[in-house]
Amino acid sequence: MSELSKFLERAEALVTRLEVLLPAVQPPVDWNASIAFRWRKAGGHGHLQPVVHPHKIRLSDLSGVDRQKQLIEQNTRQFVSGLPANNVLLTGARGTGKSSLVKAVLNKFHRQGLRLIEVDKHDLIDLPDIVDQISARSERFIIFCDDLSFEAAEAGYKALKVVLDGSISATSENVLIYATSNRRHLMPEYMQENLEYKHVGEEIHPGETSEEKISLSERFGLWVSFYPFDQDDYLGIVSHWLAELGCSPREIAATHEEALQWALSRGSRSGRVAWQFARDVSGRLRAAGAARTKRG
Image (cartoon, rainbow, N blue to C red; front, side, top):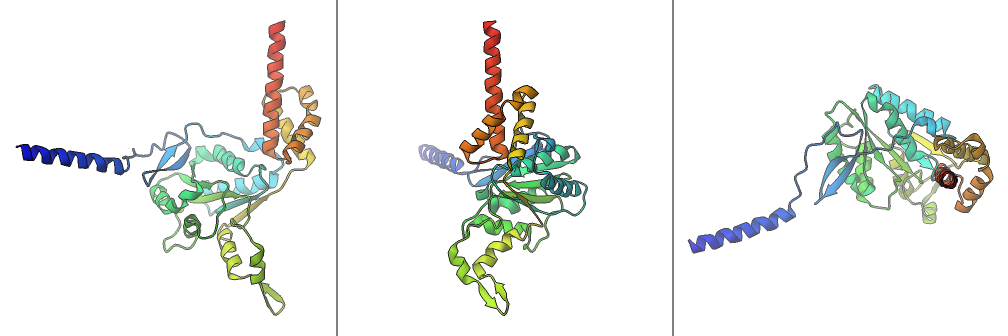
């Protein structure tokens, strides 16, 4: 019996070690818990995690990007209606509303069955697994990749190409990919690559390196470009957010010069900078008003 006891103790110790190495059993996805989800990895295994408080920005909150809103809204409307629609690449200047626009269409169309799954760049190799999990569901899913860019030979680069177009299996009808990036071709471009271009008669043909980089962005059917805001657009965005935060028209008009100085110090007249300025000013105005009330 003593030998059996020792054997059982060693077996129990071995099982304990193995349990540490094995991934935790993930509960089934609660699709009613949220309209937005994140793909999370633990122990080498991924799962979908509901976002408890998704960012509920409205399309009307986004100023200076009317054409971009029209394109994204129309493409998303087609998608949730079961009509043909395209994967979307949103590129351009930072802070101009690329990711906010994706969140805004989710807010607009979630009652029609639209859902969003955010996937980090380093987890893009799991895209086939994610698509397999959602392909049979009735909802329509946007897989959202924010601030996307790649270095050469990254695994996620190849995985994204396959899911967009190039796999032996057809892409699921209830899935689209929306990606934002500051780079139109999603990869860094180097001076050396210009030397690969060749003259063929009157035409210029890019080299293999450039062709490879272009091949990924070309798999997105819809390209939407964003540009830096001019002064009037920037001040319009500032005024909108100050009004949303409870400032009066008189208070808003008095902030314009300070708003321009704020943008100059940040080196950018972007929607993000306008939002940050509005929060700073509205907070200071409320604090000052509370102080006056207390003194009175």
